[in-house]
Length: 429
Image (cartoon, rainbow, N blue to C red; front, top):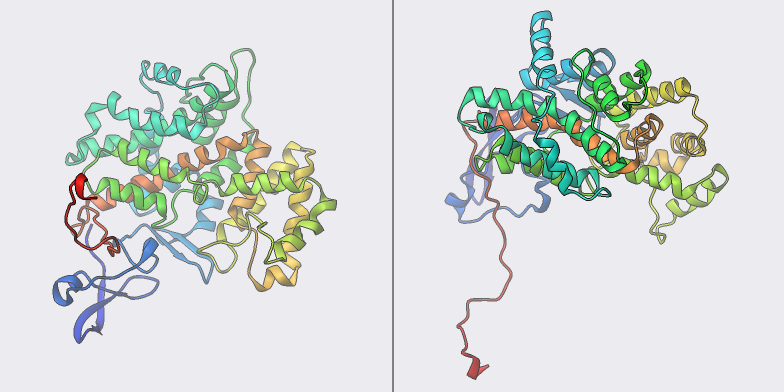
Protein backbone atom coordinates (compact mmCIF):
# COMPACT_ATOMS: atom_id res chain seq x y z
CA UNK A 1 0.00 0.00 0.00
CA UNK A 2 1.42 3.35 -1.03
CA UNK A 3 1.09 5.99 1.67
CA UNK A 4 -1.12 8.95 0.81
CA UNK A 5 -0.44 11.02 3.93
CA UNK A 6 0.18 14.70 3.22
CA UNK A 7 2.43 16.69 5.56
CA UNK A 8 0.79 20.00 6.50
CA UNK A 9 3.15 21.33 9.15
CA UNK A 10 4.65 20.56 12.53
CA UNK A 11 3.66 20.83 16.18
CA UNK A 12 5.85 21.32 19.22
CA UNK A 13 6.12 18.83 22.07
CA UNK A 14 8.70 19.43 24.82
CA UNK A 15 10.40 21.99 22.61
CA UNK A 16 10.80 19.51 19.73
CA UNK A 17 9.04 19.57 16.35
CA UNK A 18 6.88 16.67 15.24
CA UNK A 19 5.27 16.41 11.77
CA UNK A 20 1.53 16.86 11.25
CA UNK A 21 -0.26 14.98 8.45
CA UNK A 22 -3.70 15.16 6.91
CA UNK A 23 -5.71 12.39 5.27
CA UNK A 24 -8.46 12.56 2.66
CA UNK A 25 -11.10 13.29 5.29
CA UNK A 26 -11.08 13.75 9.05
CA UNK A 27 -8.81 15.25 11.66
CA UNK A 28 -5.09 15.87 11.17
CA UNK A 29 -2.66 13.59 13.00
CA UNK A 30 0.57 14.26 14.89
CA UNK A 31 3.27 11.75 13.99
CA UNK A 32 4.74 10.71 17.36
CA UNK A 33 6.70 7.68 16.21
CA UNK A 34 9.94 9.38 17.30
CA UNK A 35 8.49 10.68 20.57
CA UNK A 36 10.06 8.08 22.84
CA UNK A 37 13.47 8.37 21.25
CA UNK A 38 13.53 12.18 21.25
CA UNK A 39 11.86 12.94 24.61
CA UNK A 40 12.17 9.68 26.60
CA UNK A 41 8.39 9.88 27.09
CA UNK A 42 5.41 8.18 25.52
CA UNK A 43 1.66 8.78 25.42
CA UNK A 44 -1.06 7.39 27.71
CA UNK A 45 -4.25 6.62 25.74
CA UNK A 46 -6.46 3.83 27.19
CA UNK A 47 -8.59 2.33 24.43
CA UNK A 48 -6.45 4.14 21.82
CA UNK A 49 -9.31 6.62 21.28
CA UNK A 50 -6.86 9.40 20.37
CA UNK A 51 -4.33 7.23 18.57
CA UNK A 52 -4.21 6.21 14.91
CA UNK A 53 -2.76 2.71 14.89
CA UNK A 54 -2.41 2.63 11.11
CA UNK A 55 -2.97 4.42 7.84
CA UNK A 56 -5.98 2.98 6.01
CA UNK A 57 -7.71 3.60 2.67
CA UNK A 58 -10.74 1.38 3.29
CA UNK A 59 -13.39 3.00 5.49
CA UNK A 60 -14.06 6.50 6.78
CA UNK A 61 -16.51 7.56 9.50
CA UNK A 62 -17.53 11.10 10.42
CA UNK A 63 -19.60 10.67 13.56
CA UNK A 64 -20.61 14.32 13.79
CA UNK A 65 -21.93 14.41 10.24
CA UNK A 66 -23.35 10.87 10.27
CA UNK A 67 -21.19 9.70 7.36
CA UNK A 68 -19.88 6.22 6.55
CA UNK A 69 -17.84 5.66 3.38
CA UNK A 70 -16.53 2.39 1.94
CA UNK A 71 -13.59 3.32 -0.34
CA UNK A 72 -15.20 6.75 -0.69
CA UNK A 73 -18.66 5.45 -1.60
CA UNK A 74 -21.49 6.43 0.80
CA UNK A 75 -22.87 3.38 2.57
CA UNK A 76 -26.44 4.35 1.64
CA UNK A 77 -25.62 4.17 -2.08
CA UNK A 78 -23.90 0.80 -1.81
CA UNK A 79 -26.66 -0.73 0.33
CA UNK A 80 -29.41 0.47 -2.02
CA UNK A 81 -27.70 -0.29 -5.33
CA UNK A 82 -25.18 -3.12 -4.76
CA UNK A 83 -25.42 -6.67 -3.55
CA UNK A 84 -23.10 -8.30 -1.03
CA UNK A 85 -20.59 -9.58 -3.58
CA UNK A 86 -20.19 -6.26 -5.38
CA UNK A 87 -19.82 -4.39 -2.07
CA UNK A 88 -17.22 -6.96 -0.98
CA UNK A 89 -15.30 -6.38 -4.21
CA UNK A 90 -15.29 -2.63 -3.49
CA UNK A 91 -13.89 -3.11 0.02
CA UNK A 92 -11.24 -5.55 -1.17
CA UNK A 93 -10.35 -4.01 -4.54
CA UNK A 94 -10.81 -0.32 -3.86
CA UNK A 95 -13.21 0.51 -6.69
CA UNK A 96 -16.42 -0.57 -8.37
CA UNK A 97 -15.86 -3.58 -10.65
CA UNK A 98 -16.72 -3.75 -14.32
CA UNK A 99 -19.03 -6.54 -15.50
CA UNK A 100 -16.24 -9.07 -16.14
CA UNK A 101 -14.45 -8.34 -12.87
CA UNK A 102 -17.68 -8.78 -10.92
CA UNK A 103 -18.54 -12.03 -12.70
CA UNK A 104 -15.06 -13.46 -12.05
CA UNK A 105 -15.17 -12.46 -8.38
CA UNK A 106 -18.68 -13.85 -7.96
CA UNK A 107 -17.58 -17.17 -9.45
CA UNK A 108 -14.50 -17.34 -7.23
CA UNK A 109 -16.68 -16.92 -4.15
CA UNK A 110 -19.47 -19.22 -5.33
CA UNK A 111 -17.16 -22.13 -6.10
CA UNK A 112 -15.40 -22.01 -2.72
CA UNK A 113 -18.52 -22.33 -0.56
CA UNK A 114 -18.15 -26.06 0.13
CA UNK A 115 -16.16 -27.15 3.18
CA UNK A 116 -13.99 -30.25 3.49
CA UNK A 117 -16.16 -33.31 4.13
CA UNK A 118 -14.18 -34.19 7.27
CA UNK A 119 -14.87 -30.71 8.57
CA UNK A 120 -18.39 -31.85 9.48
CA UNK A 121 -16.93 -34.18 12.10
CA UNK A 122 -15.44 -31.19 13.88
CA UNK A 123 -18.92 -30.09 14.97
CA UNK A 124 -19.56 -33.31 16.86
CA UNK A 125 -17.15 -32.14 19.54
CA UNK A 126 -19.54 -29.37 20.59
CA UNK A 127 -22.52 -29.75 22.87
CA UNK A 128 -25.83 -29.30 21.09
CA UNK A 129 -26.61 -26.24 23.22
CA UNK A 130 -23.30 -24.53 22.43
CA UNK A 131 -23.58 -20.84 21.55
CA UNK A 132 -23.15 -20.37 17.77
CA UNK A 133 -20.29 -17.92 18.39
CA UNK A 134 -18.43 -20.57 20.41
CA UNK A 135 -18.83 -22.89 17.44
CA UNK A 136 -17.75 -20.18 14.99
CA UNK A 137 -14.59 -19.37 16.97
CA UNK A 138 -13.50 -22.99 16.98
CA UNK A 139 -14.61 -23.86 13.45
CA UNK A 140 -13.01 -20.87 11.71
CA UNK A 141 -9.75 -21.37 13.59
CA UNK A 142 -9.81 -25.02 12.52
CA UNK A 143 -9.87 -24.08 8.82
CA UNK A 144 -6.09 -23.70 8.94
CA UNK A 145 -5.91 -27.43 9.74
CA UNK A 146 -7.85 -28.25 6.54
CA UNK A 147 -6.45 -25.75 4.02
CA UNK A 148 -2.66 -25.78 4.32
CA UNK A 149 -2.29 -24.42 0.80
CA UNK A 150 -3.44 -20.92 1.79
CA UNK A 151 -1.75 -20.19 5.12
CA UNK A 152 1.57 -18.69 3.92
CA UNK A 153 0.98 -14.95 4.38
CA UNK A 154 4.13 -14.15 2.39
CA UNK A 155 2.77 -15.89 -0.71
CA UNK A 156 0.43 -13.65 -2.78
CA UNK A 157 -1.37 -16.66 -4.28
CA UNK A 158 -1.97 -18.15 -0.82
CA UNK A 159 -3.37 -14.84 0.38
CA UNK A 160 -5.72 -14.52 -2.59
CA UNK A 161 -7.09 -18.05 -2.18
CA UNK A 162 -7.50 -17.49 1.57
CA UNK A 163 -9.52 -14.32 0.90
CA UNK A 164 -11.92 -16.17 -1.40
CA UNK A 165 -12.20 -19.12 0.95
CA UNK A 166 -12.93 -17.05 4.03
CA UNK A 167 -15.68 -15.02 2.38
CA UNK A 168 -17.17 -18.07 0.65
CA UNK A 169 -17.08 -20.51 3.56
CA UNK A 170 -18.21 -18.19 6.34
CA UNK A 171 -21.95 -18.47 5.49
CA UNK A 172 -21.56 -22.25 5.18
CA UNK A 173 -19.95 -22.42 8.63
CA UNK A 174 -22.51 -20.04 10.17
CA UNK A 175 -25.37 -22.09 8.73
CA UNK A 176 -23.77 -25.29 10.02
CA UNK A 177 -23.46 -23.73 13.48
CA UNK A 178 -27.16 -22.87 13.37
CA UNK A 179 -28.26 -26.27 12.09
CA UNK A 180 -26.13 -28.02 14.71
CA UNK A 181 -27.70 -26.11 17.60
CA UNK A 182 -31.27 -26.82 16.40
CA UNK A 183 -30.54 -30.48 15.69
CA UNK A 184 -31.20 -30.44 11.95
CA UNK A 185 -29.02 -31.94 9.20
CA UNK A 186 -26.50 -29.72 7.45
CA UNK A 187 -27.59 -28.35 4.08
CA UNK A 188 -25.00 -28.11 1.32
CA UNK A 189 -24.47 -24.78 -0.48
CA UNK A 190 -25.97 -24.34 -3.94
CA UNK A 191 -24.10 -22.67 -6.79
CA UNK A 192 -27.31 -21.51 -8.50
CA UNK A 193 -28.21 -19.16 -5.65
CA UNK A 194 -26.86 -15.72 -4.81
CA UNK A 195 -24.81 -15.22 -1.63
CA UNK A 196 -27.58 -14.34 0.83
CA UNK A 197 -30.12 -16.59 -0.90
CA UNK A 198 -27.71 -19.47 -0.48
CA UNK A 199 -27.21 -18.66 3.20
CA UNK A 200 -30.95 -18.51 3.91
CA UNK A 201 -31.41 -21.82 2.09
CA UNK A 202 -28.65 -23.48 4.14
CA UNK A 203 -30.24 -22.19 7.35
CA UNK A 204 -33.94 -22.83 6.79
CA UNK A 205 -34.40 -25.56 4.18
CA UNK A 206 -34.88 -29.16 5.29
CA UNK A 207 -34.67 -32.41 3.30
CA UNK A 208 -38.36 -33.17 3.92
CA UNK A 209 -39.78 -30.35 1.81
CA UNK A 210 -38.99 -27.67 -0.73
CA UNK A 211 -37.94 -24.23 0.49
CA UNK A 212 -38.29 -21.07 -1.58
CA UNK A 213 -36.15 -18.11 -0.61
CA UNK A 214 -38.13 -14.88 -0.28
CA UNK A 215 -36.68 -12.10 -2.45
CA UNK A 216 -37.64 -9.51 0.16
CA UNK A 217 -35.92 -11.47 2.92
CA UNK A 218 -32.80 -12.05 0.84
CA UNK A 219 -32.65 -8.36 -0.09
CA UNK A 220 -33.01 -7.28 3.56
CA UNK A 221 -30.31 -9.70 4.69
CA UNK A 222 -28.08 -8.47 1.86
CA UNK A 223 -28.45 -4.94 3.21
CA UNK A 224 -27.71 -6.05 6.77
CA UNK A 225 -24.52 -7.75 5.58
CA UNK A 226 -23.39 -4.74 3.53
CA UNK A 227 -24.08 -2.32 6.38
CA UNK A 228 -22.03 -4.45 8.78
CA UNK A 229 -19.08 -5.19 6.48
CA UNK A 230 -16.63 -2.74 7.97
CA UNK A 231 -16.55 0.06 10.51
CA UNK A 232 -13.02 1.42 10.62
CA UNK A 233 -10.61 0.43 13.44
CA UNK A 234 -13.12 -1.00 15.92
CA UNK A 235 -12.19 -3.56 18.58
CA UNK A 236 -12.52 -6.70 16.44
CA UNK A 237 -10.84 -5.14 13.38
CA UNK A 238 -7.96 -3.95 15.56
CA UNK A 239 -7.75 -7.49 16.98
CA UNK A 240 -7.47 -8.96 13.47
CA UNK A 241 -4.75 -6.45 12.58
CA UNK A 242 -2.89 -7.10 15.84
CA UNK A 243 -3.01 -10.87 15.31
CA UNK A 244 -1.97 -10.42 11.69
CA UNK A 245 0.97 -8.22 12.66
CA UNK A 246 2.63 -11.31 14.16
CA UNK A 247 2.40 -13.16 10.84
CA UNK A 248 -0.45 -15.41 11.98
CA UNK A 249 -2.34 -17.20 9.19
CA UNK A 250 -5.58 -15.56 7.97
CA UNK A 251 -7.90 -18.18 9.48
CA UNK A 252 -6.36 -17.64 12.93
CA UNK A 253 -6.66 -13.86 12.51
CA UNK A 254 -10.35 -14.05 11.62
CA UNK A 255 -10.99 -16.45 14.52
CA UNK A 256 -9.41 -13.83 16.80
CA UNK A 257 -11.73 -11.19 15.36
CA UNK A 258 -14.75 -13.42 15.98
CA UNK A 259 -13.70 -13.93 19.60
CA UNK A 260 -13.47 -10.16 20.11
CA UNK A 261 -16.77 -9.52 18.34
CA UNK A 262 -18.48 -11.94 20.72
CA UNK A 263 -18.07 -9.41 23.54
CA UNK A 264 -21.47 -7.91 24.47
CA UNK A 265 -20.03 -4.38 24.30
CA UNK A 266 -19.17 -4.93 20.63
CA UNK A 267 -21.12 -7.44 18.60
CA UNK A 268 -24.01 -8.13 20.94
CA UNK A 269 -25.76 -4.77 20.63
CA UNK A 270 -28.59 -5.92 18.34
CA UNK A 271 -29.22 -8.92 20.58
CA UNK A 272 -29.29 -6.60 23.61
CA UNK A 273 -31.74 -4.27 21.83
CA UNK A 274 -34.11 -7.13 21.10
CA UNK A 275 -33.89 -8.45 24.66
CA UNK A 276 -34.78 -4.95 25.86
CA UNK A 277 -37.92 -5.02 23.69
CA UNK A 278 -38.77 -8.40 25.19
CA UNK A 279 -38.33 -6.97 28.70
CA UNK A 280 -40.69 -4.08 27.91
CA UNK A 281 -43.13 -6.59 26.46
CA UNK A 282 -46.05 -4.38 25.44
CA UNK A 283 -46.80 -0.85 24.24
CA UNK A 284 -48.62 0.11 27.45
CA UNK A 285 -45.39 -0.39 29.46
CA UNK A 286 -43.31 1.96 27.29
CA UNK A 287 -43.98 5.12 29.39
CA UNK A 288 -42.63 3.28 32.44
CA UNK A 289 -39.39 2.40 30.67
CA UNK A 290 -39.03 5.84 29.08
CA UNK A 291 -39.18 7.31 32.59
CA UNK A 292 -36.56 4.80 33.75
CA UNK A 293 -34.30 5.74 30.81
CA UNK A 294 -34.54 9.43 31.74
CA UNK A 295 -33.81 8.77 35.42
CA UNK A 296 -30.06 9.11 36.00
CA UNK A 297 -30.37 7.08 39.20
CA UNK A 298 -31.93 4.14 37.38
CA UNK A 299 -29.49 1.61 35.84
CA UNK A 300 -31.87 0.86 32.95
CA UNK A 301 -30.65 2.02 29.55
CA UNK A 302 -32.44 1.99 26.22
CA UNK A 303 -30.46 -0.34 23.98
CA UNK A 304 -30.26 0.35 20.26
CA UNK A 305 -30.37 4.13 20.67
CA UNK A 306 -27.43 6.48 20.19
CA UNK A 307 -23.95 5.41 19.16
CA UNK A 308 -20.43 5.86 20.51
CA UNK A 309 -19.16 7.11 17.16
CA UNK A 310 -22.21 8.69 15.54
CA UNK A 311 -23.29 11.91 17.25
CA UNK A 312 -25.87 12.34 14.54
CA UNK A 313 -28.24 9.81 12.95
CA UNK A 314 -26.47 6.54 12.14
CA UNK A 315 -26.42 6.54 8.30
CA UNK A 316 -26.88 2.78 8.30
CA UNK A 317 -30.07 3.08 10.35
CA UNK A 318 -31.98 4.90 7.59
CA UNK A 319 -31.32 2.05 5.16
CA UNK A 320 -32.11 -0.58 7.77
CA UNK A 321 -35.32 1.15 8.81
CA UNK A 322 -36.69 0.89 5.27
CA UNK A 323 -35.62 -2.75 4.91
CA UNK A 324 -37.24 -3.61 8.25
CA UNK A 325 -40.55 -2.15 7.09
CA UNK A 326 -40.38 -4.12 3.84
CA UNK A 327 -39.77 -7.41 5.66
CA UNK A 328 -42.53 -6.85 8.21
CA UNK A 329 -45.01 -5.89 5.50
CA UNK A 330 -44.05 -8.75 3.17
CA UNK A 331 -44.20 -11.43 5.86
CA UNK A 332 -47.24 -9.90 7.60
CA UNK A 333 -45.89 -10.91 10.99
CA UNK A 334 -48.07 -10.25 14.03
CA UNK A 335 -45.52 -9.87 16.79
CA UNK A 336 -46.19 -7.58 19.78
CA UNK A 337 -42.48 -6.73 19.96
CA UNK A 338 -42.72 -5.01 16.58
CA UNK A 339 -45.47 -2.77 17.93
CA UNK A 340 -43.25 -1.93 20.90
CA UNK A 341 -40.36 -1.17 18.55
CA UNK A 342 -42.46 1.14 16.36
CA UNK A 343 -43.70 3.14 19.35
CA UNK A 344 -40.21 3.42 20.85
CA UNK A 345 -38.91 4.61 17.49
CA UNK A 346 -41.64 7.26 17.29
CA UNK A 347 -40.85 8.54 20.77
CA UNK A 348 -37.10 8.64 20.17
CA UNK A 349 -37.58 10.72 17.02
CA UNK A 350 -40.02 13.17 18.64
CA UNK A 351 -39.33 13.35 22.38
CA UNK A 352 -37.28 16.44 23.29
CA UNK A 353 -35.10 14.48 25.74
CA UNK A 354 -33.95 11.98 23.10
CA UNK A 355 -33.66 14.52 20.29
CA UNK A 356 -31.57 16.87 22.45
CA UNK A 357 -29.20 14.07 23.44
CA UNK A 358 -29.24 12.72 19.86
CA UNK A 359 -30.36 9.29 21.04
CA UNK A 360 -31.64 8.24 17.66
CA UNK A 361 -32.42 4.60 16.83
CA UNK A 362 -29.25 3.00 15.45
CA UNK A 363 -28.65 0.06 13.15
CA UNK A 364 -28.70 -2.43 16.03
CA UNK A 365 -32.26 -1.43 16.91
CA UNK A 366 -33.54 -2.22 13.41
CA UNK A 367 -31.33 -5.17 12.52
CA UNK A 368 -32.37 -7.13 15.61
CA UNK A 369 -36.04 -6.71 14.70
CA UNK A 370 -35.37 -7.71 11.10
CA UNK A 371 -33.33 -10.80 11.97
CA UNK A 372 -36.08 -11.93 14.35
CA UNK A 373 -38.62 -11.50 11.56
CA UNK A 374 -36.42 -13.55 9.21
CA UNK A 375 -36.55 -16.42 11.71
CA UNK A 376 -33.13 -16.23 13.37
CA UNK A 377 -32.89 -16.81 17.13
CA UNK A 378 -31.17 -14.07 19.11
CA UNK A 379 -28.04 -16.13 19.81
CA UNK A 380 -27.40 -16.23 16.05
CA UNK A 381 -27.32 -12.45 15.69
CA UNK A 382 -23.63 -12.01 16.51
CA UNK A 383 -22.70 -14.95 14.28
CA UNK A 384 -24.40 -13.16 11.37
CA UNK A 385 -22.49 -10.01 12.29
CA UNK A 386 -19.26 -12.03 12.10
CA UNK A 387 -20.25 -13.40 8.70
CA UNK A 388 -20.67 -9.91 7.29
CA UNK A 389 -17.68 -8.35 9.06
CA UNK A 390 -15.37 -11.05 7.68
CA UNK A 391 -15.10 -9.05 4.45
CA UNK A 392 -13.92 -5.98 6.33
CA UNK A 393 -11.53 -8.00 8.46
CA UNK A 394 -10.03 -9.60 5.36
CA UNK A 395 -9.71 -6.23 3.61
CA UNK A 396 -7.99 -4.73 6.66
CA UNK A 397 -5.71 -7.77 7.01
CA UNK A 398 -4.67 -7.50 3.35
CA UNK A 399 -4.00 -3.79 3.67
CA UNK A 400 -1.93 -4.33 6.82
CA UNK A 401 0.31 -6.86 5.06
CA UNK A 402 0.98 -4.41 2.22
CA UNK A 403 1.71 -1.44 4.51
CA UNK A 404 5.46 -0.63 4.51
CA UNK A 405 5.06 1.04 7.94
CA UNK A 406 3.51 -2.06 9.51
CA UNK A 407 5.17 -3.41 12.64
CA UNK A 408 4.19 -6.11 15.08
CA UNK A 409 1.77 -4.60 17.59
CA UNK A 410 3.39 -3.77 20.92
CA UNK A 411 1.46 -1.20 23.00
CA UNK A 412 3.28 0.47 25.90
CA UNK A 413 2.10 0.76 29.50
CA UNK A 414 2.53 2.91 32.59
CA UNK A 415 3.80 0.61 35.32
CA UNK A 416 2.34 1.46 38.76
CA UNK A 417 3.12 -1.79 40.61
CA UNK A 418 5.59 -2.37 43.43
CA UNK A 419 8.99 -0.69 43.17
CA UNK A 420 12.06 -2.88 42.71
CA UNK A 421 12.67 -4.98 45.84
CA UNK A 422 14.68 -7.97 46.97
CA UNK A 423 13.45 -11.50 47.42
CA UNK A 424 13.04 -12.51 51.10
CA UNK A 425 13.63 -16.21 52.02
CA UNK A 426 10.75 -18.02 53.70
CA UNK A 427 12.42 -17.94 57.14
CA UNK A 428 12.59 -14.16 57.07
CA UNK A 429 8.98 -13.44 56.06
